[in-house]
Length: 206
Image (cartoon, rainbow, N blue to C red; front, side, top):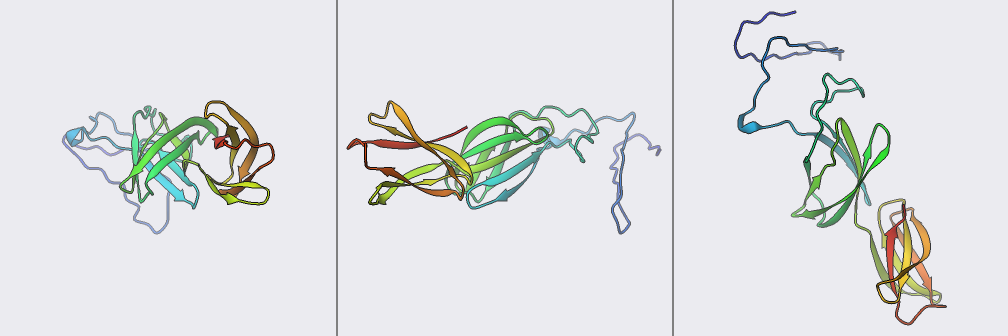
């Protein structure tokens, strides 16, 4: 225990040794909480890993400490938090959210990247949250072969999609399901049995 006289104090805990150490806890008694100017509040911390087809994101609440579950207080719910990611190609980006502790899905959101910045709205969470980010899938016609129409599907690596066909852009029928193992897949739709005018789209298979 350390007794301090009344007044404003800055408390620093410094490791002066050459190795790491464990700090079990710090308890302050008979003190008032600090108030920041302009009502500033600590924001979640984030770390990510970017790949050619998708990126991984991990976000931690400002009051959490680790290993998992070793929190020093009852963490408040993080609500309406946002995150700015830089150096992004312009366009729509899907974010699949997960609870790291249970691997349970927290839903999918869509964000837009402009001026190389992606403004990402975070789902409500208490301790941490993770996401897989990838550009919205794109299906394009790339030519013809002797067997049929060739389509290219660009998506996240390992994404499962159902190729659908329509004659009127109203009613859609599934043709087949594909797993885009590399992030870019070439699909062939046979000419046989096709209408002269057909439309195609790829939908996420859950």
